[in-house]
Length: 107
Image 1 (cartoon, rainbow, N blue to C red):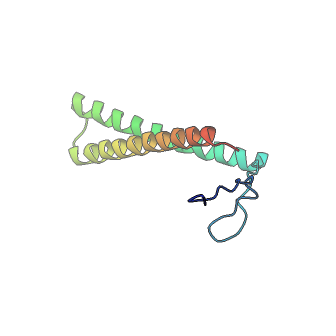
Image 2 (cartoon, rainbow, N blue to C red):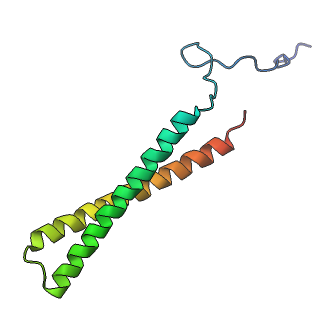
Image 3 (tube, rainbow, N blue to C red):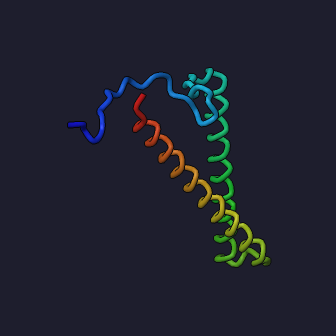
């Protein structure tokens, strides 16, 4: 009696190829200069957000004490501070998600 299907052993997975037939990219450790550049970029961005937040806070205090004539400028400063903070929290969230994804990868 003939079996309905034949079982062939599965061999090990060889070099993994990308969709276009090229080999998968390898992980390369960034140079110290690249790491410092990225760190300074993040530091400068956070300092900028802090500066925008401080400016908004000072303008709000000036309005509350009656030392400000132009409410329009204070509103714009508050909106800039809000957008900067939302963007910062979004970037931090994306970085955390990317880090988690990298740690879950199996090499």
